[in-house]
Length: 344
Image (cartoon, rainbow, N blue to C red):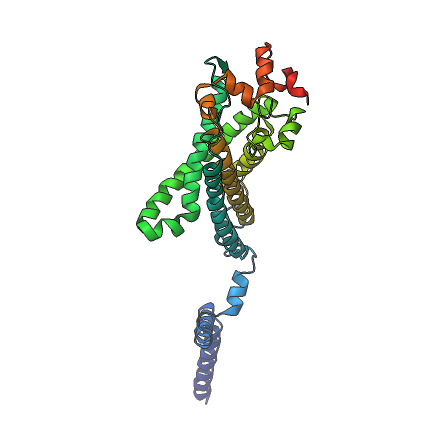
């Protein structure tokens, strides 16, 4: 009887052990993972590619675990990127594209109607020094770097709309690969030239009483009449403050943020910088068309003044009479040393 009891006890113990093992297996991580996988399969069958709880968690903007370092490194998807993309591919590209077509077209039509602003009197052959070597270096350095940035920036923004239909995607890929490198490395150099321009020409772009005359008579641009001014007229001063200083520094600072993304910027900061950079660059390029026009075919002799640094006395007297008077009187011609430029 003892043997039979022990035999039945052994069977009972064995059954108990099997039951415990089954419980362990049932609640083990592997079984749980299999259960989760099965649940996921069922979810995909019921709602293919629409696992709402997972996507809500991913798109919540909350940071999760990651081995990467840096701001927002644990955030997989930032939904605000859709807003940036809509702005970049929508209003900035569309309105900016039209602006860059309308402005040069209007300038061309104006030139066809009015022609180049000629001198009223014959040149004397006597020259006055208008720009020093340092001033011309700062100007041409800013101009060359700006044109490089303009060409590459236009390719980045409009390349897929303009170049792809004609040359194809492979050509655009080469253009953007080279253009991005040029844009990234020339950008900081442009910023240095902008600072140099501001430092050199700041003293000549202050308000003077003679600027009120230029404003009242619109610089003589429409009537073609003579409007006296100091070393720079109010139109040139407006370009200095709005174009060179405000827009130049705006695109430089926003560009530097995108050039150096690992200085603690968030993706939201980069989106804002990109929008500011795009808008500022388009407005600066559109405004530069007017400056380029006046400095080349718009005004006779204007290009030579920046090319050689010298102007004829007739040109100086007809375009900057107060500056001409000051220089002929032995003064520097700068506003702080001007007598005639301060009168109205």
